[in-house]
Image (cartoon, rainbow, N blue to C red; front, side, top):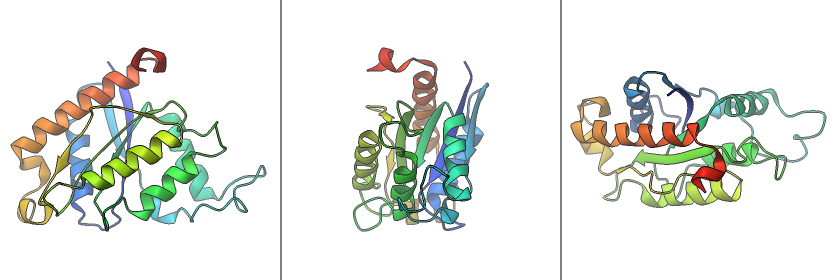
Length: 189
């Protein structure tokens, strides 16, 4: 089975634990599956209908849309900022949801996972991201979850790719996302 999974990371920080988690997912991808980390979310302007017209969108937003259109599935990695997802992820979802009813998210298999400092691993942020993605037209994969708590301590001196529990969880997520990418939308509804 082959699939191209695009990873969107909600933390822009170079040493982000969620970015490290995404890197671990890319390294763990099974044969035939590619997990590509999208670079450039920081360059996408806040969504504004005045700059998203029939004549076109800003180049950075158009690049994001094209990358998502080419992917078989999306995997979002989110920290938790003040009990919700970071603005950079919400902004990406807003751009991907347009034009309304026909955005590149429409029926695209999508899962949300991540790590956060708190004891619940960012579940509030993940729940909010799933809700927003579903409203935006994405095919949110039910039951595909991974929330890793205590990121600051847990990954202080080790990369997520060196954590056996993380590897097991990421492997399961990658299998589920790959299977969803191969299945038609009506088969998984």
